[in-house]
Amino acid sequence: MTASSDPVVQVRDLCAGYGETVILEQISFSVNHGEIFAILGGSGSGKSTLLKHIIGLYPPRAGEVLIEGKNLVTLEGHERTQLLQRFGVMYQNGALFGSMSVRENVRVPLDVFTDLPLAIRNTVVEAKLAQVGLLAAAEKMPSELSGGMRKRAAIARAMALDPAIVFLDEPSAGLDPVSSADLDNLIKRLAKEFGITFVMVTHELESIFGIADRVILLDGRTKRIIAQGDPRALRDTSTIPLVQHFFRREGESPESTESREP
Image (cartoon, rainbow, N blue to C red; front, side):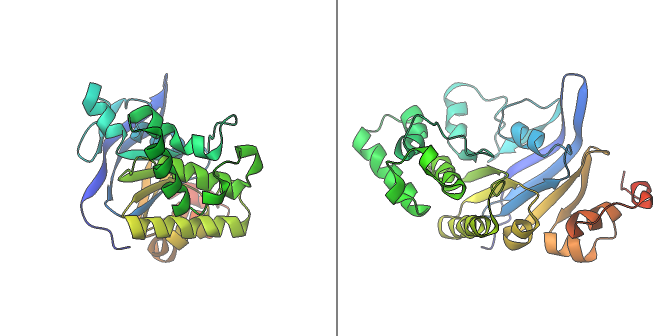
């Protein structure tokens, strides 16, 4: 899908951390409407921390995050509730409730945020399950699903309120190559057919090169973004050693640690 130039997520000079520990400094980037955007980095680089700050789980130490031009951290009451409904989140392991059926899991956002009659809520759920190819599994329990099916159910739940943006935390983690490719194809199709903006944390190179329009690469040592843009262009043309090592899955040479961007 061709993304528009309208930013739906803007991160401005974000500084983030926990307690006395600073994890990210001076992080700035934007995500345009309709993009599949990936947050990349090695272990401990702050990918999950950044995601948690974007969706408002933690306030930044400095800087701000705007979703559709609004700051979730400073909003209160009805305005905050409205903005929360504009995005959905799929957590790394799906985070499905084990005591609920697939139908009940996907219905949770509708149960919490709407007062629609149960019949209408269930109709919406069926539509979302159909979109991810899981309608036949509506009455199954999460324990009866494969890993790929649990991820699809979690995406259906993230889309229950027709959000403009869906955040995905390591969507392909734990999946075999075929299931991972199927999930990538699903994300591409949903972005194209429904105009959903996807922001995903991932380290899976096949997914990155297969579906991501743009990426940022975080470095845990500098605590900053060291590269951003089309992942294929970064792989083929970047002269930054750490970027080359990441995209080519190479070990770092001692010299590369001396050549990082500040």
